[in-house]
Every structure is written in structure tokens, then in C-alpha cells.
Image (cartoon, rainbow, N blue to C red):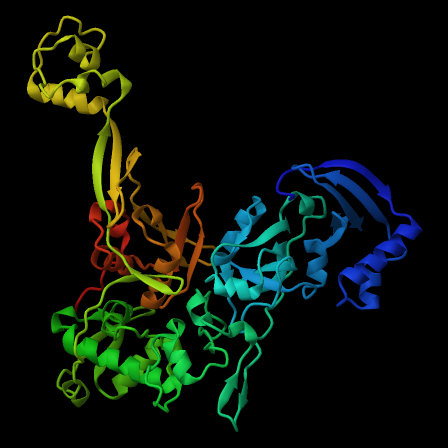
Length: 555
């Protein structure tokens, strides 16, 4: 609403009766505020002004200014706090969390889309459609925006966190904020997540209602918490057999008679994938092998169909801890060949754990893209470069197919320059070159079972870049996935599992209705395998693969 400059109609000091009425309106609109807090927000003696203005879209807005800062604004008889007020009362509204990169879009006037939300371990706040909500950034609960929920929390989860989540009204750094002292948000620590209650007698876990359903599937986990781990999320009050059938918690043992805990089942799956990868995929020539590559390129591919390997749900929590355990059993040897980067340098293929491992029966698998509760096989499109005939060459291509080397009037008009009026003949190669130079590029994309789509211009390749963030961390950014029929949210979910790194999906800068995927770290090697081998896209339509990290040199 305040993304662009507004026009002030009047600015007057508030009257005593209006001050008392405003205090009553604040108490009614925000019942969680105590009497002392309302009095502090709307003081009895400090200067308080009423500013009436018109937003750039013509909305009539009344703003209440105290101490030089806008503290409240009124629109259509509804009262809203500004970010200045929310910094003093951060728990005034239910607060949702998003990524810092999203803030730039919100300041520009965009609404907050559900894929941009970060789902905390305690689940999303419970709201109804039309409720006023605050938006904070990861790592700081000081709100940076307010908006109205476009749907209830239950509907958000049912939608798979897709679509528009909040209609934004006001943000940090917009023109309403600029009318104040332009201070920055304070640093407020996020609230500690509540631990779930465990009922020992019934042997069940009572979780927050926000976590019911397929919460695990909906979560694109954000940056690691203080100890570098993401707490395990529960699946509501489902029994083990119900949870095993839920596609959101794939990786659990589907056998309802299995009495093992979910953590014990994940430990077994982790060891199974580890031994399978060593026995069938890793060769001596592959060593030394980066531990991250071993996980993403070998262990994940050995995971049984219908199950999902998630180390954070195991007792080890981290890959390094699991590999240290395997090293203590003398199955492998791990060394730090570069600072902070571990590699598997030796494998004892004669170890009883490997020799006794029975390779499971192979089952036909296919790369799938998750869309809601359905899985559809992905097939790469057939892409053909075309040439569009401009109006100046229409007559040439209306001929019956006889391309003449002796130039007739049509050819002269189409391919000769103005100073070449004396030219009557051209060689074949020159004739064809001139024709192609004057044609306009186009392309045709055909997805299996669909009609061909023809568009002008050249198809944009999938663009992979590396970016450096303020924290000096690298992120891998992928754009233009939609042109090839790939859902960015689905690709992000696959990369999150393969790379064991946080992923986000945000609007692509400078591109309308296009999203980009960001993965923490340099994950181009994983992207290369995913796009070239799993999705089978031609290499010529992918740019940026040369930026993959160089493999460590063998000793």
C-alpha cells in the first residue's frame, strides 16, 4: 500500500476526546495489550498528530504519529500497527517467518506467496482467513511487515504451501516507514520452540495441531538452528502405520507390525543405504571421495523406492557423526583433505558388514515430480530451433519449393542490400547464409502427450549461478526451470534431500511470474546429475555447469 509515495491531505494535532477514543479503539482492536501498554502506545501528554493522506492507489488512510514516528494507521475503519509499534510489541500479532531475500519484493509492493514461508519446528501460527498477521525474517522475530491472511492455516497446509498467502499492507523501508525516523529493526531472538508432550502411559506423542497432516512434506527447511540441526517434526497424532502411509513421511518402515521407533527405522535405512552404496557403486578408483558427494550421488540413489532418507531424523543427526561411527567400526577411513571438507579416503571392502550385506531386489523406478498428493513422471521436452519468416521474405517462401540461384525480383527484394542492385547471381552457400540471417529465431517445445508450443526468440537455458551472501556464504541459484516443465518447488525439495542443505524458492528478479531456487553452498555437482542424468535434459540447454567445485586431488 505504501510502496510508492503518498499525498498528505492534512496534518493536525489530536484533540483530547479523539485521543481517548483512539485509546479505546486500540484496546478493542488488540485485546492482548494491557491497560499500561495501551497508555504507553497512546500517551496522554506527548504530542500526537493525525495525518490524513491518500495512498498512490487512491486509498484514504489516517495515520497516527507520535514522537515523529507513525504508530498506527486506519483504513476503512480498521486499525493497523506500524512496524515501529510492532518492534515495541513483537507479540501483538501472529507472526510468520520468511527469508531476507523476500523482503525486497515485499517492499516493492508484492504480496507474500506461501512458498516463501519458513515453517518452524513448532508449526505455523493458527490464523483464519482475513486475520491480521506480522511477517518476520529468519533469525529475528522483530516484524518487518504486516498483512492480511488470504487463507486459514489449515488451508495453507492443504494447498501444499502454494499460492498467495498474505495481502501486504505495510513493510519496513516503505514510504510510511520513511516518514518516521527510519530506524532499523531491533535484534530480537526467535522464541524457543515448545517441546512436544510425551504421554508415557499411552506411548503416543501429542504434537501441536499445526503439525498435523503432511507437514513434513510441506517444509522447505530454513537455515540450520543454533546447533546446526533441525529438530525432528512430528506427524500430528497419527499412529505409526498411518504415518508410514503418509507420502509426507516417506522413509518410515511401511510395516505396521514394526515396533521400532521412527528414529531406529531411520538408523537402519541409513546403514542400509551406506552399505549398498559401498558394495555396488563406489570403486577404489573413486577415492578419495567427498562425503557430500558420497551422500548425494550414491547413498540417496540406493534408497528403496517409496522411502526417503533423512539423516536429521536419525540418531546421528549429521552425516559426519554417522561416518565417524562407521570409521570406528573400521569400515571406512575419513580424512579432512582440505580445511573443513571431509573425504572418504579408504574402504575395507572385505569388512563383514559389507560382505554380509544382501543387495535388495531391484525395482523399476522413475524420476517423479511431487505435485500435491499426485506423482507424475517427468519426461524432458523435445525442443527444436525454428525460423520465423518476416514479412519482407513472405513472397520468397510462397514459392513451390524451387530455390533459384539466379536471382529473380523476389530474391532480390529479400536478400540483396540496397547497393547491390547489379547482382544477378549468388552461390548456394551465400544465398542460404543470407536467407538464414534475415529469418527470426523461434523454437518449438513439445511435452509428451501435449500439443507443440511455438514461441518467438531463443529458449532461455536453465541458468545456474553462484552468489555470495553477506555472511560470506555461497548459495547456488537456479532460474528458468519452468520453461522446461520443471516445478521449482519440487526441484528444491529434491535438492534439499540430496544436498542436505537448506533451500528456498523466491521470485526471480526481473522476470515476471518466474521463480528461482536457492540452495546453500556450491551444489552445481548435484544439479548436474539431477538435470542431465535424472531429468535427461540436453547439456546445451543448461548454462553454469562449469562452476562446479573442482574435485580434490588424489595423493
